[in-house]
Length: 426
Ligand code: AMP
Ligand code: MG
Image 1 (cartoon, rainbow, N blue to C red):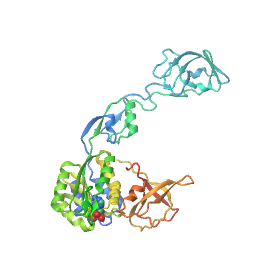
Image 2: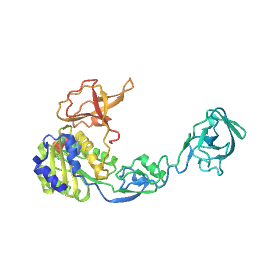
Image 3: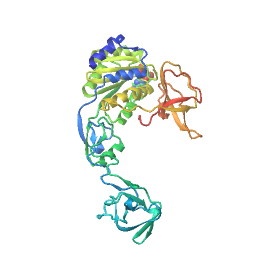
Image 4: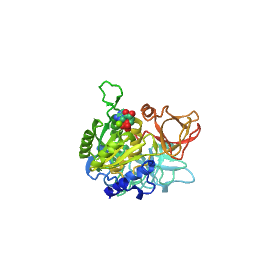
């Protein structure tokens, strides 16, 4: 299915509604890419800790009730609510003690109670706990007024999870709480999808590597380092293929090598108008790739397709554009390929912007912003300074994107804007 539609997208775009490769809306490009993503299918069985950041390959069913027994939620005295004296004082005899991990053996009879600690199993016959602070103790007796209602201060078996209930569904990305949740069920191993393999390289004759002195017109290759960081945070296996010069034979070999070893290939540079023809010819030979000009800033050029069996993303060369296109297109695609059918949509929050932003409608802008708590206690955002797509400092300073959609024009100080928080993305 995907081979055919991908060639439709390249050769016969007029059959697609509103298809304009020279002004592709962000959401539309995401949607097209989504149609071609085929998740990995290989499954591994791993101990709980190693599943952090992996995607579950099957539903996890609870093998037991959690909690396993009715137990006390407080330190106090367990009794049966039939013994409550609703019009005055309730008085009970203490017949024993129940500790967490050491239950009281006997059964509570009429007029009796058991001293009970938080987490201890409720003694037979008891259905309510009165907290110790509300009780007067007198030797082997307790007295209290205004007793708790039946069932209070206890946790019922299965109130967290019932035996057989789906605890986490297949396709779920494992996070810290999930590790604990799985451990609370007594499960030691899980079936998860294998790690995704992502190969990447930087293209450009002007790129110098760290350790070399810069010659006139050269810049250090920074994209491979941001890509390393972003990919590592996503828990994929990375294959760093270094810098490849703008020489067709070298690029061709690098793409072939990448396709042979990786599920996904990322390149930076070489897809802008001046250079794209070169890459286009090459990619036509090796696979099926579309070149779009996305209606966004930064990050206008983007190439997407298949090289061999690998998914290919040709990212722009500018350092900020690389990060923005990664977060807006590649990240979600990787999550789908990792086995998550519906990656969570990143929240877009409304916040007052205290700076002025000049913007033309017609494209989506991802300005770099700093969210901070204002004196009135509300959070506000201000753009970092220079928003040039080569100014990587603007990304390093930022803790959010200010997302201005296609319909938005200039922003005046005090206007509400949408922000996407970088923590969580990164
Ligand atoms: P390109 O998309 O190849 O035309 O590159 C656009 C701009 O990004 C140029 O100024 C390049 O020098 C710069 N650039 C491309 N690749 C890198 C890289 N790996 N690290 C830093 N800057 C880069
Ligand atoms: Mg270049």
